[in-house]
Image 1 (cartoon, helix red, strand yellow):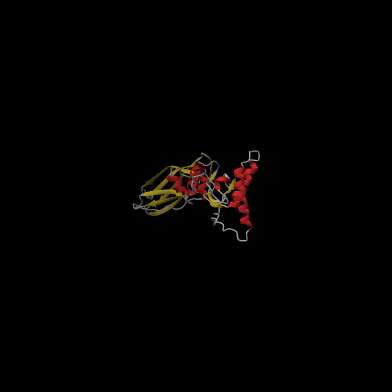
Image 2 (image 1 turned 60 degrees about the vertical axis):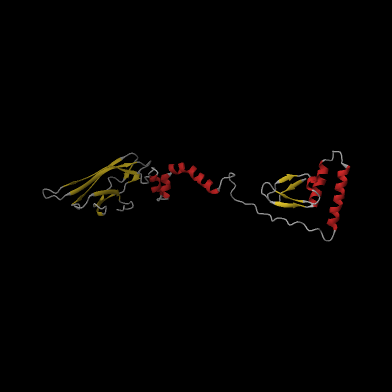
Length: 249
């Protein structure tokens, strides 16, 4: 006889003769659902088996026993008070949603997905940083700094000239701007911070952009100066004027 799990619809075949006319409880091997096979279910299963074995030789003894049991079941079903059925276990709703690899938890699957996407994120890190500026520090920490501006500052030197012949002392800073973008990019002005021994900013002065636009692999030399620089200055920090101001310790 063919039985079907009421919870997950898994199908199983049992011999009606091994179940017995009193019925029995069965459990699904797939979802562990338990339900009760009634005598009527067993009888219907036996009749289906007989129909499938129509060409086989009949067994008079077995047929007589099943006919007697069948009459008993039908008589019981015709009474006004049917025998109490065993309580059927509630059907648990099947869980929907995650249908991934068996044994793979959703959290582990998410981790593997992020790990697989990491090379793509590294290749497109410039676009990522434009959308999420805070990610720049993360890329820099793993050795993949991102230059969203498309310009690098090279060969920076700073020197001072003492006051003489009526000329005041002067601080000079110069270096090269190199275009690293694939297209022409605009060049912003620069800003120089003068810091004391404790790292505090005590003076700033601007440095004009050497040109308006810088092409791929092009170099432009910049130069700026400040007369009468503060005597307590011990270090200089150079950055683009429209960048976020740096903070001292």
